[in-house]
Image 1 (cartoon, rainbow, N blue to C red):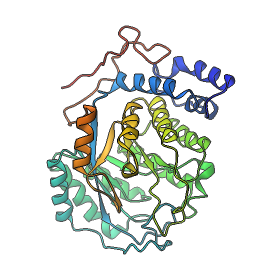
Image 2: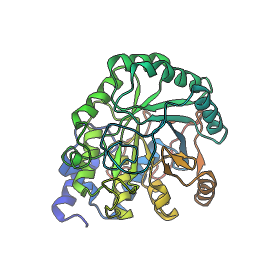
Image 3: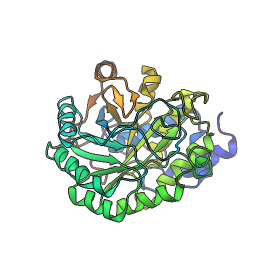
Length: 364
């Protein structure tokens, strides 16, 4: 569906503000007008904004490990780890610290700069916090960034993780507030936003995004991004997942999303959160090379490397290496930085008024 004249007018009115300021006052109608722009126009704007702050040929590489699998008390309709669903996944205990550090060491050797540790919990138990702290400290000792996703956190949990030096906390909003109850009933949307706010207050960076293709409409995808973009600070990482329909879960028979609609979501995330890393996350095994290339062009600049994501499959290092070679992409290192404060003023299209198309990237 392409935008009508009224929607295009709204998008044009928004255009001068798209890149020159990091905004926190997006309206849904304004964002939806951008989402519905002609596809080439949408990608042009997203790519122009993307290269104003990032090297368009660098991709941040993260690795994800399930440190405690299955048996989760939440009823998230997409998740094989929920105790509510007959997915056949067996629950496991919390992994040993040394095993986690060994896996992180392998991830670093393969090019990952951030190590993400996920546990299938509604919230961690106090008896597990010392182990989690040791994992954070051990992975940081390898010179990697750390991220955890553990469900909801108490203030004491947050304090311990913050003092351990946790860099990022992942807590996805999943979808729009309106569609949320059709996917999850055991935790509210407000619960998720509260966790994000308290993590942020503790000085931990926020990683938050959602899942596309759960039966929601375009308005819900836009609504999710409006929620994230209107937070007091944008999430530093925004993972956009394509639903992996897992047998035994309530969403196993949901119709697959059109890849073009998925790319539109990536592009809108880039436009609305111009300084955030937009991660092309779960679902890449279902994407063609061409779809992934369009996502990178639309502003995705982070992926999960390796052949497993928690319990689902992932393309693996060989497939990613071949794709990167074809596209001329390379992994970002921790020495690669960008300067988002010294860019030339942006035109209405999102291109620098001085040198359209030229990259402004500093490598230190």
